[in-house]
Image 1 (cartoon, rainbow, N blue to C red):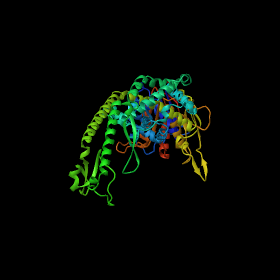
Image 2 (cartoon, rainbow, N blue to C red):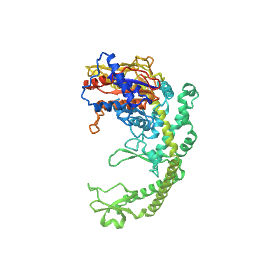
Image 3 (cartoon, one colour):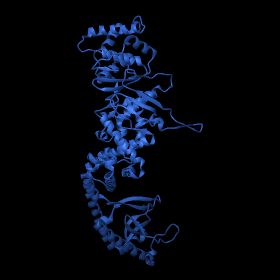
Image 4 (cartoon, helix red, strand yellow):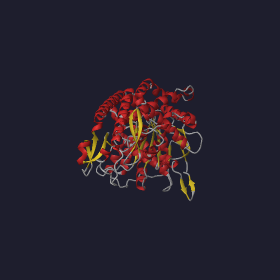
Amino acid sequence: MVHVKLISQLFILKIGTVSIAAFCKENVSKKTYVRQLWRHRHKAATSNGLNEIPNALGYAEENDKVIKEIFLAPPTSSSSSSVVDNTTGSISKNVANALDLPSILDMFARFCVTDLGKESAQSLVEEKRRAFYDDIFHVANSQEECREEYARVKEAMQIISESDKKPPFLKWKRYEYNESGKDVWLWEALVGKIAFLGLEHVQRASYITSVAISTIRWSMDNNFEAECPHLFQECLKLQSYYKNIALLHHHISDSVVEEYTRSTSTFTNEVKLGLNLSKYPKLMNLRSQENLLKNSIMATVRDLLKSESIRSKLARNPDGSIPDDIIEIDGRFLLPVPQNYAASIGKIRDRSRSQKTCYVEPHEISDEIIELTSIREDIVETEKRIVAELSRKILENIPLIWNTMIKLSRLDLIFAKASFGENLDGQCPIVDDEGTIYVEDFIHPLFAMQSRVVEKKVVNPVPIDLKLCNSDCNSALVISGVNGGGKTAALKSFGIATIFCKLGIPIIGTKRSMMRVDFFDDIFADVGDSQNLIEGTSTLMARMVNIAAILERMRGKRGLVYLFHSYTQTLFRNFRQRFRIIIKKEEGLVSC
């Protein structure tokens, strides 16, 4: 049975469409059906006080035939949209825009700490959503999935309220070596765009595995499984990687350290990454030899600076004084000497801009410089070999790191929903499949985030009640009123509540009372004016085509339909006078 929930600013328009669809019978010929259709329409019109169905409405008889055909063979395509595409896990873009979902999801993404968590929320409105985002932020396909997700979110809300039990990943640090702060390198390594990783990647991989291990140990607490059984089942997926993650972390952890150097140009401390010498004894030994030899060379050069025979040949400073400091350029220890004395003191390694001063490496340190150069070459080769091994190890385990990030982002997403609910007074509703929506004092998420201040007073948003149930009198809702009265905002509120249910996001309401938002198999909306002058399709005709297509797609499903239209008087009269039919339930087709 198809269960149709109707929410519209124009009740008669939708009811007329449903009634026409309800009388479609496969075993009735087209001619017989049209005769029955118009007979029933005439009966409905006269029962409502109309003597006849007016025909002088600006439509030719030929157009009448086209109108009759619409519901006999619903078109395969239309501008009507299903809110959620279950094949891609994304939300229809035009419907998302009508419900202000991009802004709401951007606001929700702020509660996520991982980039994949943020992107999975924002990608819900993208037409081509990557499959792995659905593993992080899943759109429920059944009421059981909704209930399970809300159960996890409830447990996360309880954990957040207890500050001493918060999971380690909530202190997530962004990637510092990318302007966007995102771990783009991880995705590029996964798809084979990166063949070699640098120290910054090693440091980041070590951090990811460290957070994963801390989170796994947090979830292995003795009381966690008993107190949070649903969340524990989600953590089990991460725990299955524990052994491999621990082995990788042991291999790469503490391999990279941050070294602070003073910049001579900006006079600020700059961070430079280097290998941790305490983890690599051979490299430490080479570095020790380098430092000893370097100190010996500098001592020799200082002695030369004290020699009168050398001092007399040095180039003078701009103030006429004799240099007392050693000049180090590219790891070489040099003295400033005029060009006419350079060859007698040592080997020229560099020159000043004016070419008058030469920077000379003294003959006295030549042997030590050769030895120092050899040690430095060994250091470079050793570092390359270590980094290459770390890079190879990480690249071999990129799928493991990626899957770990997906699982961490999934937990992040659950706790983001919990934080969203805690910060905005949201609640996890009761979810069933009877087509009921019952939320008292609902607050639109965008309004909840923006309290206005007028004349030094905080103006809180006005809540509304969302009530719709599966009964003969309440299965459809008419929203009407003056311009600026909040009709569209109210209509959008129903849409947001039902989509939040499919996404497992707490519903915002000021009353701490029972909330109920039932699961719908599909959510449809007819958005905008779809008239086409080239194809000769009027606004009225396009509206009927769209609604007929929605009903056709909803066969065998329990769905919810939203009509986002402001109908003109002409459109209202045309549709009322031509298709005003008494609602009738047909077993196996439509229930209103």
